[in-house]
Image (cartoon, rainbow, N blue to C red; front, side, top):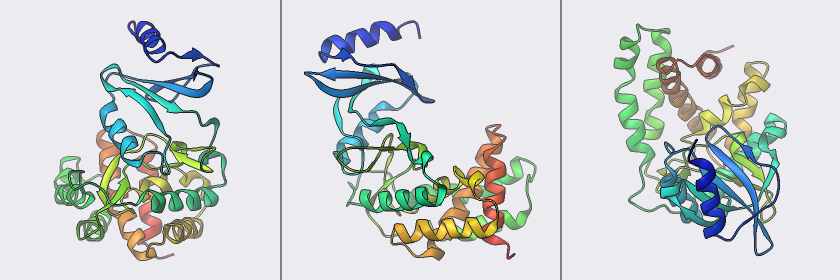
Length: 273
């Protein structure tokens, strides 16, 4: 924090930027409206612990296709120069069912052939699913074994994929802002390769508080699957696996809200009414 003012001043000078509005922030970065030769942009300064290089890699890969456009970057300084989006309007401002449609279409928009060197969703799912029971035991069996078995069974939907499409591994409503080139653009994508439904559990659980009952959860899942042109049962399986996986991870990390959401989401998708 002590070094941040000087780091900002250096980026302003190196990239010939002029301040152009109040500073905002999210959970991991400071966002500073600037102009460069009259063009409105934003200077994003990340905390040193953030993997800025991975974000830069993802944005350079998509080159503005469904994502915020990267103008310049200096990963060693935690700095990115980005096109300016509407920072006051995200998909969080949409009704939750409309947000599901936007994020489903976004997943399909980003699904272009990915480099073979990018991490595979199948590999990630294989490693995580293999360790589910050991983690469940380590934590003292924190939930009914039936949920664990449902998660293990559902993992096959992701492990068996032969897809080589690009996937955003951090997809949720707060990461999608209103844009000019396209109506909605993703910020902070994580580039993966494989099954585009891989992170759909996060899409749902981040808006789960807006879904009053099981029927609403199922309706939202259907909207999401249809918007992404994916089979509903496949999306259901991918969501169940990821929800059980994140449920355990969240408990281990000391989270208090998301494990409850994962419990509710998994219950809705595995237990008949």
